[in-house]
Image (cartoon, rainbow, N blue to C red; front, side):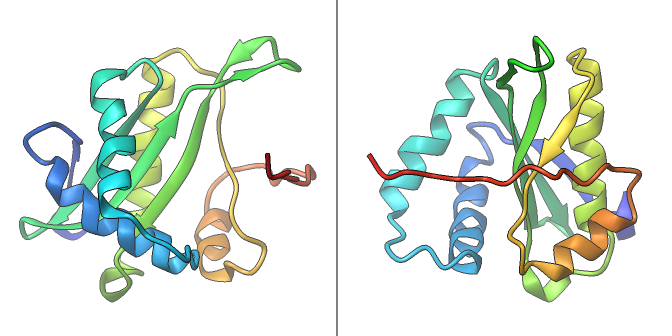
Length: 151
C-alpha cells in the first residue's frame, strides 16, 4: 500500500473510526446540518446489508485517514448491476500520498471480485484536486449530467 497505509473493511469493531471521516467528507461538500447520530444510523446499515454496499477504511500509522463507499445499483442500459463508488475521502493533511489511489484500487478489486464489469463514480465539477487523481486512471469520463428534484 501507499506509504505503509493499510485498507480494511469497515466492521463493527472499527465503525467508530469511520464516523469522523464521514463528517469531514460532509464538511468538504458543505453539508449544512451534519447529524452524527443520523450518520451512525445510516452508515451502520451497510454492516447489516453488505449486498447493498460496503465501506473500507484507510489507516496510516494506525490512524484512520480515509474511506471509500461502494454501492451496488442496477443499470437499465447495461441490464446489469455495477459498483458505484459513491464516496471517496482522504483527510486533507495527508492528501497527495497515494491513499486515494489505493482506495480506488481497493474499490476496483472488490467490484471485480463481485463480478461487476464497471466501477463508476461522480465528483463535483469544481473538485479539480480529485479530478487530477482520476486523470491518472484509465477511466472514461462520462458525458452524463446529474439532476435532482426535492420530494
